[in-house]
View 1 (cartoon, rainbow, N blue to C red):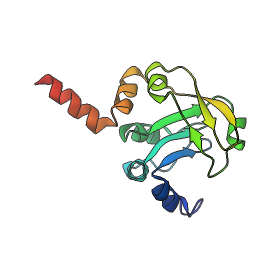
View 2 (tube, helix red, strand yellow):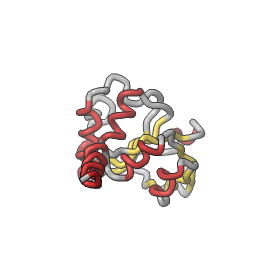
View 3 (cartoon, rainbow, N blue to C red):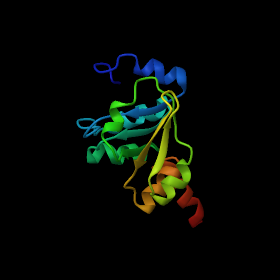
Length: 143
């Protein structure tokens, strides 16, 4: 995973128990297979912050409980370095309400806004941990 662009990614993600991915435009293009998103889930990645997403990969991230987020200001991406510590303090309320949220870069003492375009149903899927957990919860409530 990311062998060509970031050979140390898998080891870093494992050692840190996951984290965030900061990406550019059309993140996930060519990675529409579910395996690309499931690999991130196994590594503990909680969110991908990108300028834009490929449609199918966006859906796959959501299905695996990984938040697809966008920055409202493209210049924010240039100010985040590999290894920076990011804090997303109000994730549940942000994901439920869809209002912009502040993401703090603790390493550089700065903040920037992120947003999402999730529907209410997609927000529930994400907050419950992915489509399988969401479906299981719904199945249990129908009996």
